[in-house]
Image (cartoon, rainbow, N blue to C red; front, side, top):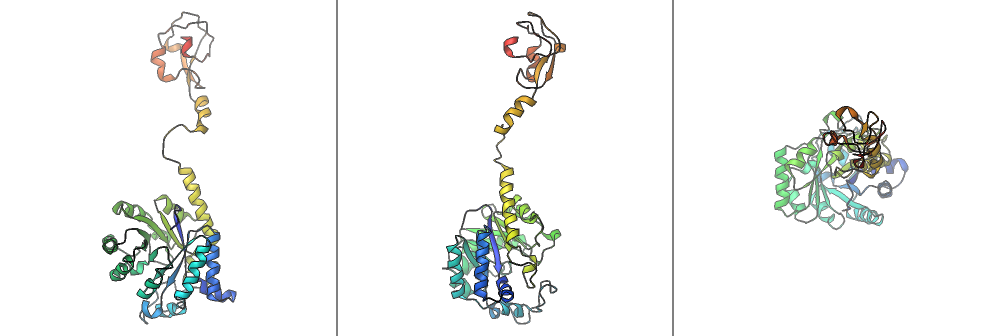
Length: 347
C-alpha cells in the first residue's frame, strides 16, 4: 500500500456499469476509464466489488437504499445487474491500476472471490455487511495480506470480536473504518467522533473512515474525519453524480476528490509540527511588537532610576519589562533623554 496521509480509497464499486450504458462502451472499458480518472485525481487506490448475486443474497431480500434514487426493489435484482465480472476482468483492472502507479483492491463477498483476488489486490477490504461473518473474515485473514474493514452498524463489542477474530487467524495489519451503513448518510448521523472512540479503544490498529455522506461544496466531512485522526479514507467514486443508480447520488466525482486531497494538504500545512518555538517569520514582529523599558523624562548621569522614571513601550530592542525590579534603584551611566530605550550598558 502507498504511504499517503491519509490513504485515499476510491470506491468505484459497480458504478462503471451505468457509465458504460450512457457512454455506449463496454463495462470493462468504463471500468478502466474509472481507474484512469482515479489515478489522475491523485487518489491512492481504485476499489471494486466482487460478487455473484446468487452467493451474496437470497432472492427475496428487500432493498435498504433510497428507492427514489435506485428503484430496484430487491437486493437480488440489483446485484444481478452488476455481477458479470470475474477473475479475468479484475486481473486486467489490477494490472492497469498498477501500470498507472496506484493500488488496486476489490471487496470479496464470497469465498471464491476472496481466493482469486489474492494475487490481484494490494490489501483486502471487507464490507460492514460481512463484519459479523466471522468464518469468512478468518478465511481472508489467513491469507496474510493487510485487511481494511468497515465497522458500520456494529456495536463496540462486535468491533472487538471482529478484530480478535482477524488476529487469531493471523492478520497483523488491520485498519478499521468508522462507517454509517445508510445511503446516503444524513450529516446529522455521520457521528465522526466515533473515529476518536475507535482510536482510543483500539490503539494498536489503524483507524479510518468510510464515507456515505453526500459531498458538500468544500468536502468538509472528509476534512473533519482527517482532523479527528482518520488514517485511511474511503468514499464512493463516480464520473457523474447525476446518474441514476445505487451509488452515484452519494459518491464524489474527481473534482470532489481533488478538493478533499487539497484540504488534507492544507490541513497538514496549517497544523505544523506541534513544537512551540519562535518561528523565523515571527522574529522581526517579536522584536518590534514586544516592549522595552523606556525613560519617561530626561535623566542626568548618576541619577537613580525610580518606578516613575520608566514605562514599558515598543519596540523590544532594549531591557525587557520583566527586569523592572532589577532596573529600579540603579544609576544611569550617562545623560539620557526622555523616551530613550534602556539597554544594560546605560545603567
